[in-house]
Image (tube, rainbow, N blue to C red; front, side, top):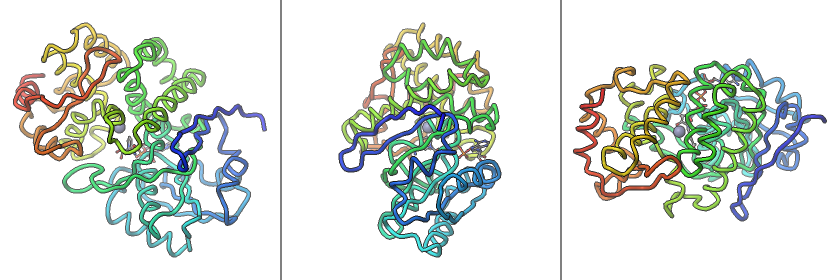
Length: 367
Ligand SMILES: NC(=O)c1ccc[n+]([C@@H]2O[C@H](COP(=O)([O-])OP(=O)(O)OC[C@H]3O[C@@H](n4cnc5c(N)ncnc54)[C@H](O)[C@@H]3O)[C@@H](O)[C@H]2O)c1
Ligand SMILES: [Zn+2]
């Protein structure tokens, strides 16, 4: 075995688990996951695109028989209909509570499979094998699982931690440039939350990362996993005010996604990138954040080809509609919507007293 391996731990007492990061790790899945595959057989859940690229490779390295369940690719798969079908398939496959279902794919497969695992027989084991940048730095870690509802994204779900996360960074070689860049929004988010030095690193290395530089890629994934693991370890269920910081850019981002009908017009990460900028712009408007910091972020995102204005996404002058989407936000508290704002790069905080009329007017006037 030659591939280098970095392990990041998510420390949650009896629910602690490792995140293994390395190039070529799919070939070591049997060796790494072995102890967790207690019954000597398992089920791999994936989507059609990922199945054609990596399913055989993963199954071949497990060193034991495995069944497969293949779902359509895309956000629409995070639905009640697909959840029902998946649960029925898992039961038909005879999955037991101590089994370990493997979620091979992006955030869609990870979120759906994790949710199915959380409710199947009142909770089965599952491991994440994320294959998109977004899933490798964010969604596969921390145990948030969900499907979408008509009223909004991720509104039906559960906290259910995986037993392990296996990240083969080489899988990103086949990801489209657009998906890779979208996932990068969640990387730069960690710098903006509380790590200004990492934001500086991003300014220097993001171009290389997006061009496929494996060193920059591995470093970004490791730093992101460390940040996510630390925050989840401090506040697993988003109750103490720490984990909520990970939603920076997401209140705006989810509203933009909803306006785009959760379609390919705007990927999650693209919406988050613009959402990050809007959060900084509102922070400047409220006199909380220096204009120079918002400008630094704008220049960085623009240099990578992200949309940095509402009109570029066809979302200008939709203040009232966006506020209506935000009213479905999971952070809503007694009719008030707390906002994640920033006092500067690396200084995110939760503001509970933001006047929604100001945000609506800002969204109406911003171009
Ligand atoms: N649970 C969480 O904490 C959390 C955090 C952030 C985002 N999310 C969720 O994650 C979802 C988005 O995840 P995503 O961006 O990974 O989308 P995705 O799972 O839809 O994957 C994007 C596309 O890339 C394809 N793909 C996946 N891996 C590939 C590879 N290696 N090579 C080529 N193609 C590949 C997929 O088939 C899909 O078409 C959203 O539903 C979002 O709500 C969840
Ligand atoms: Zn996100």
